[in-house]
Image (cartoon, rainbow, N blue to C red; front, side, top):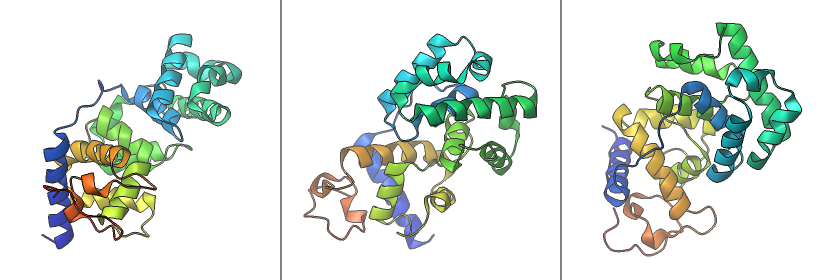
Length: 227
């Protein structure tokens, strides 16, 4: 085991000790998760959820969203921000899935090898590695590691990835560091660390539960008991 692998597992253990085994909302079906994740781009969770719930309230099925006037979809998701981009993007993805599969059903992805399922999702414009990984991990229980803004920042700061590594490459890199059974907890706990402690401008280093395993050069005096 490499030094980086040992450190990554120590950080995983430290976050579990501090935050416990994280819980996730009830898993969504894959098409629901795909749309929800597209809505989440460049916004926060409450705004995403408001837009998703509005969309579901205004349209009884995803087929109805697909075939609706674009202006109606845009109005429904206004709270997510960038609605003029996200509305047409969602409709285009739904139409392309229908053309490919004959229906809006992504359950077949569960039977594909991970990389085949990832490539299939990512061929649609607006579905990048993070969106694909979220659908695969949370809806299909496949071993994918989504990298969002928080995880990308925190993983570079604490030394889990090379600082100049692109976010696209970070997905495969972080997948290689942890056993698949750790992806779920590590993904959610790194996000929590980024939101509550490892802030973009003023990280709260003294209260970081994994400070002693961190490479962040400007970090301040450690709090007792940090990993």
